[in-house]
Amino acid sequence: MSNDVEDVFDRDKRNEVKIKVERKDGEPTAAFKGATWAALLIGTSAYLIGLFNAAMALNEKGYYFAVLIFGLYSSVSLQKAVRDRDEGIPVTNIYYGISWLALLISISLMAIGLYNAGSITLSEKGFYGMAFVLSIFAAITVQKNIRDTQKAREME
Image (cartoon, rainbow, N blue to C red; front, side, top):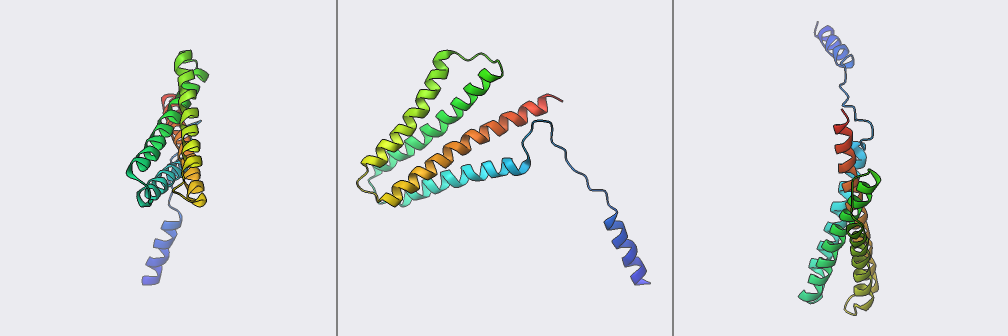
């Protein structure tokens, strides 16, 4: 008798209707959103942990921290300005130009700082450079995903 009950229970589990949450047209997949957030967290965390553990003066750590924050902000600002222009939302030429200039300056400051840093090894320079680039790229992608999700949900 108990086998009959188990068979009915197992059959009911197999016949369950799985509810699938459908994404809106144009919305990024959950996997892609998760991957971009993970890349941002990994990139910035690795950079900051490396900076915390670095054997450099506090003012040098402050410089690299400020360059990271400046790079993250400028990359998101530029992505927003580019996207706004593409969607016909007014963006002044001065803001658009400043956004590009700010990103280029942040990348230049990182490159110049790493090139002139005598207190860190070449492998550390590569580590900071790659963590910086990963963080900037991920910040742009996260902002794009947020914008795509918002736009897809507004189209309902």
